[in-house]
Length: 168
Image (cartoon, rainbow, N blue to C red; front, side, top):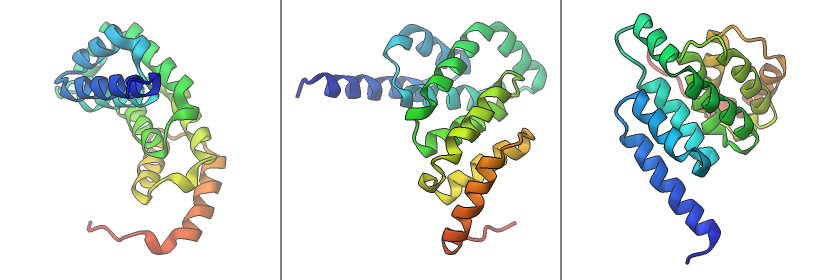
């Protein structure tokens, strides 16, 4: 099948493989910069999450230096993620929220608020782990998200039996 939809799916899969193979956040941003116009919403979420996950392990000073060196690319990726929010699945919203907090960029707060608002309308599509991750991100960033919290409270009441106790 060589339909346009099939070609887009093949390109998206290929790009995700390149993003997952990247070993540094700079490599992820390199893939994004080279292929940005071909990125699907899933590629954007993957890139955003991988940049956060691969952040310099040397600590905050190294993270800040990386962010300063790549500010324009990070801003562009953040804007693309914000534009893609209506198309992101629940798991991508949760990982994007995690990434927004993990990168510790002040500019990410606006994105996290937008993720919380988008998630409030789709809270029933989140797994219990996804809800936990999303709420962790909102709480860690101290973001006021009353619509999200109300929607989660209703969802938890409906699904209380599906939550598992985790060892502490």
